[in-house]
Image (cartoon, rainbow, N blue to C red; front, top):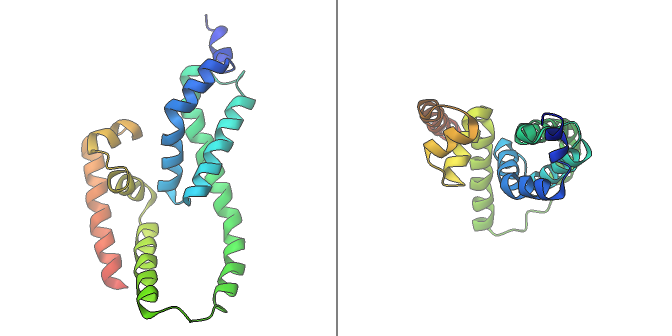
Length: 171
């Protein structure tokens, strides 16, 4: 039976089930780590492609962990690449024309301040914060998905809220 487990992921029905069960979770996880929505979608798809490519090596019961590990590594690689791209993007943004109305400018600045504050949160706090605020997950659901105790989730959320207040007051 142990010999059959690794090949299970290569069966189309098993693979489809894994995709339908975990694609949204993987995509959201990447989004919470800081990926933009489209980037999170692309990285999630790449993680599933790698699962398919390595289906003989990945036991079905380890597929979820494999997906999250691969997704995390893809995200980290993308962020390393993004550092270089951001330098050029900042240069081109500084040359943009200030023809937008004041309201749009203030709205954009507020949005940037909020994104900046969220991005400054430590990764574990940011993940819990976004899972709660964006997906409307309860602390128990977050704890289950991240393999933590509810108390640990509560503590991370509390720290995230305090940190957000401090960051926004300092801006």
